[in-house]
Length: 168
Image 1 (spheres, rainbow, N blue to C red):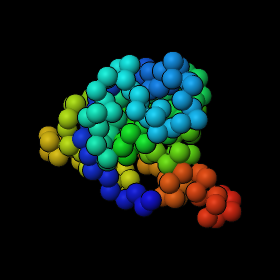
Image 2 (cartoon, rainbow, N blue to C red):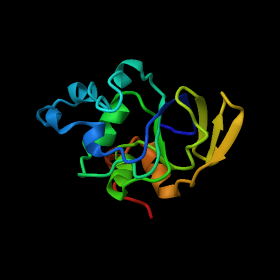
Image 3 (cartoon, rainbow, N blue to C red):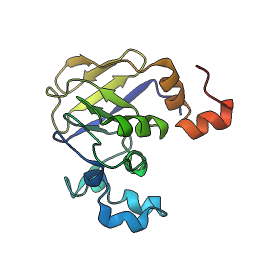
């Protein structure tokens, strides 16, 4: 999955979105049925999220996105719901790595200027977010080349299947 430029709408969330809010523990029994689990992504903070999100859309959040237990299926169900990237002021460390490993760009940036529903265009190569709705641009911490290579293959497992190991 070649990344390059991503286009979609913003779904805005607050600070401190935990992995339990991304996918509630009450759905733990669905971990072996990821398509069904993905139908419940973000429902505790936005019950209509999965109904409204379209392929390519973005999650935009505040600080410490993905805190809590290290559920690697949390970024995966976000991806399966159609989200192409997550933008946040900061990420919990393990969530950040899990997102990259699952092929989901986790972009560290200032998110205050982005509102719910804003249309965004993101250039992963340039480290640039264009807010089409507001005619504004924001930068984000550029993704290191190794991580970008993992994202371009769709995640760590597809990368290793294709290349055999990480080329550092």
